[in-house]
Length: 273
Image (cartoon, rainbow, N blue to C red; front, top):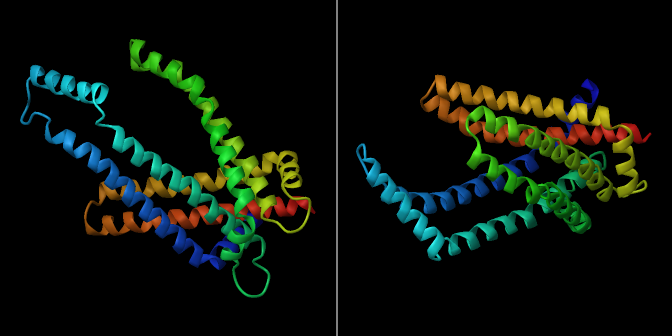
């Protein structure tokens, strides 16, 4: 496993300019999402009663907000904008995935990385697989969301609520992780120009699921540990240095994602032999 991580690190560093590109993409996405949330929340908060409001003032505020949401078209433009942002992400993310996954598999070839060539050659199958994965990952919400809302409204305590929701949430999480790993393997197959393609890569991933999942979980744990460290540092050492560390973490997080993908590719490639 250590060898796969080291080889994945070499591949990630070789694609550092793609790391910068993905970092800028995430930065722009976060900025637009922040501006969207701010445009929705700030006007509502401006109407909230100030300076220790009475219960009657809070109830009036909540009643007015409920009326505007349920009886007017106040949310319609925001829902359209949110849908547009989601659609843009569903279109752009698989393009970046296609370019990166293709380039990882051709890193040993002369001429440097092949990010743009990967987008041109593999964007169609990768986009289709990305959309199918997203739909399957969200499918349990059709069954879980109404039951979760019912549990939230009728639970007598936090412990009772967690007791009802945690098993379903845990199962949904495992389902999402399994889907991600299997569809990632198929995307590696879709961006490969040799071998049996999508179904051969899927078979390799299923046959060697334990080491593949183990490496993935280890890399995700390392990334989560770095995130917890940065968050703790920002809380303990609040100030300009903490701000620099927090902003720099987004670049480190993007590098971790590319490193994880490169390590996952290396372990799948080694199992194909």
